[in-house]
Image 1 (tube, helix red, strand yellow):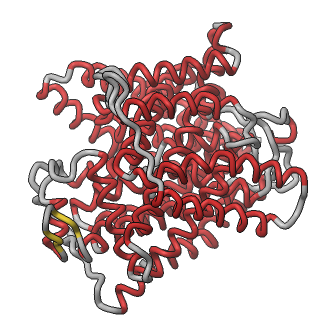
Image 2 (tube, helix red, strand yellow):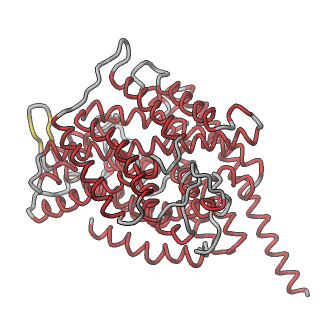
Image 3 (spheres, helix red, strand yellow):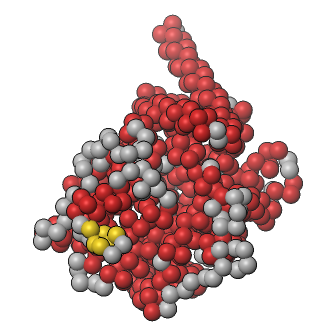
Amino acid sequence: MLLTFFLFIVAYNTYGRYLAKRIFKINPKADVPSKTCYDGKDFVPSSRQVMFGHHFTSIAGTGPIVGPAIGVIWGWLPAMIWVVLGSIFMGAVHDFAALVISMRHEGRSLSDIAGDIIHPRVRFFFFIIVFIALWIVIAIFGLVIALIFAQFPMSVMAVWVEIPIAIAFGMWLKRSKGKVLMKTIVAVVLLYLFVGLGIAFPISLPAIGMIPATGVWTVILLVYAFFASVMPVSLLLQPRDYLNAWQLYVALGLIIVGAMLTGVTDQLHFAAPALSLSAEGAPSLWPFLFITIACGALSGFHCLVCSGTSAKQIESEADAQCIGYGSMVLEGALAIVVIIAVSAGIGIAYPDGDFVLTGSAAFQAHYSSWQASAGLGSKLAAVVIGCANMMASLGLPFVLCKAIVGVFIASFAGTTLDSATRVQRYVIQELATQTKFGPLKNKWGATAFAVISAALLAFSSGMSGKGALSLWPLFGAVNQLLGGLALCVATVYLLKRVGVKSLVTGIPAIIVLIITCWAAFLNHLHFVSQGSGLLVLINAIIFSLACWIIVETIVSIVNQLYRFKGKEYGTAKG
């Protein structure tokens, strides 16, 4: 674990710095959208420390938690290798590129910018893929939080009280400049006090008529997402995400120290095998590991946050490396902690009915087959128990440890729900502007469309709010496809500016697209064999649009190379 953290630090200070200076040629004096397009609502210049917390929690969500919690079924070693190498050479490069390109194009979304950089036809196709991805994300993350509230009612109070605390914190920062650290400490202490109160006063919602508790929570969360996404970003989104990041730093610190202590006292051992290719019902490691563990290694969703919200708020290009590259390698570190939790921490003690299992028996009880570890609730439970076991070694009550982990998972999911809804609003507004569809050009109409469409998906299979699970099998491939397409845009952008050095994004783009298209094709065959008509149709549409964008990218690259050759020939001839 410590070795991987060291590698992340070295990568940030070497490769990250190389990208900033030699590839993107960061200019601290360059104009940025937060100032040139300032409106006090979406475009707001913000300090590096606030933006880092806001951006990190928005991109992270439950992605680096759920993905690794599934991925260890193939063993902890391939999961760790993919997270370390993927985040350093692919994910962080992808995020950094998307952020810088958007900042240099007035904070527009990457899907809109793709029309300028590659070809105007690409813009509409990219918009459709982005809309589908965000549509699924909003519906699913509402369900994730609802499930956490249902499983861990002690987390409910602490999560909801974050909202007034964050608003008060943001207003405090505006009215009295300076002493940010002191104000942060006060706010974070308050947040953790409510974690303790949540244990004493757990909140469980009853079913309302035909709507079960998860359905009720999903409705409440989607209504909240509507209002959160239309508020000025500095009122709630920024301060809440910033404080959530500090909550994570504290929880992560406790988990890491607990892991080190249990390691020294010989309690912590890998309960999972280093490599496992025989888990019952599990798909093949290659290529499915790479679309299962997305956040923490490479995630296309990040390009939407980078070019959707963060590019509109960064106050200087000098902050781009810290926020773009740095947030991604920190997410990689979080994914490593989760891998340790579910492959080793779970082995300290795992409740199984009337028994408490330890070691490999504990791991097998949860990961004996693909089906055994299936379900969002099951995956989240493995992470909560594993992390709480390590944290409890510090002498903290186990119930408090579970509450702390539950709160930070729910809070992270909440920040992603906020940001995804806001980004979907931007996407709809940009698309409405392109198609001249008036009702969706304003933020109220666009946000209503984003939330209502997600609600229709969430409740498409009944009142439990689990309808989005029917499309969830698509998301892994769609998410990585977005990442590959974002790298395509970055490659064409860089090719025009730094020539062959554009391979820093070109090589990752090729690798990601080959693996993802392969996985999407295998998924398609599975959907056909299962008779899942809707999945077959949507997968075919997305795959076809992606292929078109890839072809347009190749044509754009070839044309650019011909221009280079023409210039060389003209120079030599003259």
